[in-house]
Image (cartoon, rainbow, N blue to C red; front, side, top):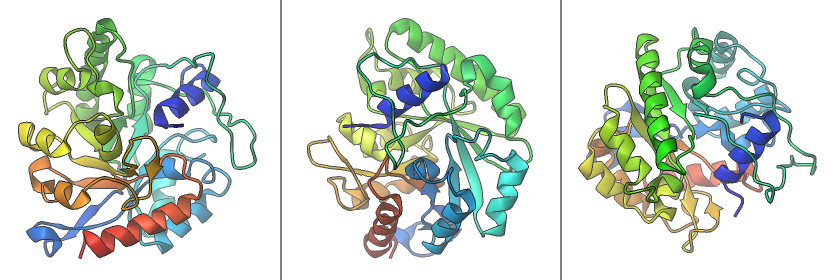
Length: 308
């Protein structure tokens, strides 16, 4: 499966470095807050840089309200400064809630092919800055955008030494974010739940980095692939999951799917949204065949089965 980890490695090597649901009322949804679907723009990686405003208009037309930004071939925030991008979103009735950055450089393994766009051409990204080397610059770049959350999309955790370094980087980033009135969260894949040395990196992050400095964006597909129950995480660490990535995966945990087309029991998970501390879940589908079709189907499923 070509997954987010592969793409991050690919784009990082090219650079030699590298839904949201917003509560809109207090009615409905399982006796808790009612949510309106929003989106992680990584879903649209193959098209958004070709026509940023047109892509955002289509998202608004589909009913999305809240935006989580990701990596851009244009640099900056899809070729804009933070205030410019925020103004563009506002004009379309959209709100910018969070932004993804990488924690440290990744290197492309020799057996991994370069990513391609919709025409089969290699995707080329500008050099991607990371928290290890460009922490203050990345935080400062968000000034004037009104973003609430800075998301560390990934960080190397392959050895105990890398895990220890990750704790240092993330703790320091949390301190810098706090001064800038940003909230730091960490986004998981499946590998943070694999034992490294004597512990799982995810458990180390939960234990060693206080909630005052960092919380978590739980990716529901990757945590499922890792064989970890998200509801149990919520019970053991209440309030630490303000962001979710709402995406689905097949029963063999090999292929990502539009929400509702895979194996994840979203009804069960959303029943524990309050315990998790949910604020903005983000619908996402990594590198779908048709991004707008996937986002449309995901929206329809959630409205019919979860948000009624």
